[in-house]
Every structure is written in C-alpha cells, then in structure tokens.
Image (cartoon, rainbow, N blue to C red; front, side, top):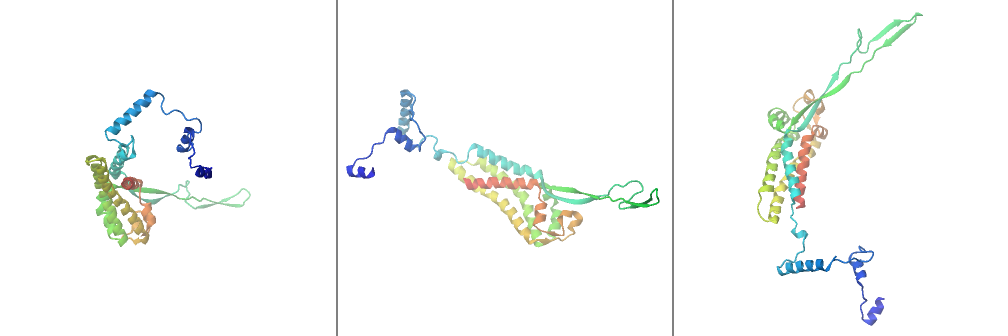
Length: 277
C-alpha cells in the first residue's frame, strides 16, 4: 500500500471515524458521537473561545500551569502536622521499666518448694511436693517531651557523666524538643503570613519547609552512633532494668515511646512537601 502511494504520489484518505480511533487510541470503538448536542451549544462555545483569543488568553481552562503549587488541602495538612508536633510535647516520648517479681501465694503452713511426707493406710510413705512459680510484671515510667527538658539536671546529668556517645545523644535529644517548638511555629508563619504571587509563596515556603529535615537527620544520627555503644557512668540497672549494663541500639529503640515517633512522622511529612514543591 505504501509502495502504491509513493508511485502515484497521492496520500491515502482517512475518514472521520478512523481519525477518531487513531487520536483516541481506540477510545471510540463504535460510531463516534457528535461533539456538540446542538448548534446553539457549538456557537456558544466557539464564541467563548474567540472572545478569549481576542483578549490574548491562549492557555486552555484548567491548565496545570495555572494550578497553585500548594492547594488549600495541602495547606491544611501542613498546618495539622505542625500543630501535632507542638501538642505531642505532652505525649510520652521515652519509656523505661523495672521487672518486679511477685511472691507466689502458698497455702497455710506451706512455703514455696516445700515437700510433705505422709503415711498411707497400708503403711507406705507418700511424699508430696509443692512447687510455686513466681510471676514477673513490668512497672513502666514515662517521660514526655516537656519533662525531658525539665529533667536535664537529673537524667541529663547522668547521661553527661557517661561515655561520649551518650553525651552526644543527650545533646541531640535536648535540642530536639526545642526544635519541636521553634520549627512548627516557623512553618505556620510561613504558611499564613508569606505574601506574593503563588509561585513566590511556594518557593519561599519550600525553603522554610526544608528546615524540617534537621530533626529527622538528628534522630537518624543519634540512632547511627548508638551502634558504637557506650558505658554508663552510673549504675543504670538499679534505676531501670531495661537499660542493661551498657548503651546500644537496643536500648535506644527500646526507650522510645510513641509521642516522639509522632513528631518524627510529622517532620517527615513537612520535609517531603519541600521536596515535592
């Protein structure tokens, strides 16, 4: 067919149905319907397009170039994330526990592990033993974000008297709650007080939201250095049994509570929006 077209020098004719099938990639598998219901509708739309062209508006309606980079819904999400970070300061951030052994209950005149000897009716000796097993439960102690700042003289003093890794970790987690106050407030100011064109506002907010990477990177750094371990400068097991005899990643993860993880998740949401803008 192509060779015949080259020889004759004519182009093959394409009817309207074939054209619709090709442009729509088989969107119209059957007979294509009219684009306009009535001639009046067609005239109205054509007139509106001609009016836009006369005014110099050549971009079509709902063009993505005219869509705001930060929608109202996204502003709401950023606002909620910033507020949650501040509120999370009253949630539990750290947890530790002691294992307490409950003394088993025994019957009258019995003690744990006591055996008794009895004589049967036929004179045989019957030995019975009583074995009880102690139960262990955990008593937890929680520390909120605000309490971690107020306890810098007690808990912080013990950490500062330990190895270098614990000292560095103490500094990081002393600055972290301060950032949970400063950065969200700065975010809210940027979201609602920044002025300019939509593009200017988006670019300024992009720079501000990048600051939310700071606490995320601080947390990641604290976790990374925990693998180097550190010796306590105090008798940690006498305070809480889950601290063990030395500091490591297990103690780091085991001492975190859900409040701090909530702030970390919100910081990630805010920081990733800076990447997306």
